[in-house]
Amino acid sequence: MEGRVAESGRPFSVSGAPPQWPLPTPPKEWSMSTSSEATTLTAFTVQEDGQIRIEWADNATFTYPASWVRFHCACAHCVDEWAGNRLVDPHTIPADIRPKKATPVGNYAVQIVWSDGHDTGYYGYDSLRAIPPAPADWGAYLAGDKAWPKGEESGA
Image (cartoon, rainbow, N blue to C red; front, side, top):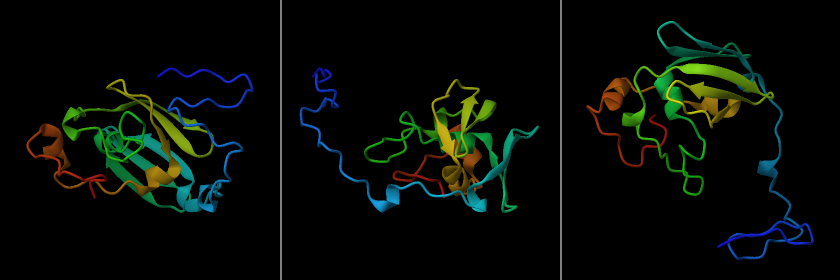
């Protein structure tokens, strides 16, 4: 199906269903929230051993394998935007993956360019803060020695 812009300047619909106009008011939970110390990033460091150290304004500090942070990318290539299922297989992430570049995006996210070429994900501070500790056997998943459990989204 092909879409085209309506002459009225209103959005077009590729699905064939007419868009709602005017747009409905978003629910309260969609409103912008103010940043708290728990989600204010103060440092993002790639250590010599390839671990990523993340420090927050509330003095919390977390250290993760770079591959674990890469696995938690929430871009459309890595997570099905409709179902929310993780699309990236841990076996496809190189064990020696490293961030080549990390750039702040406003006051809410970090964009990471990875050594495997992946660069489409923004890691929102809320999402970074929510990354659980890597499982003790994470290396076995990367090596393919262990199958990733079906339906396991976060790895926690």
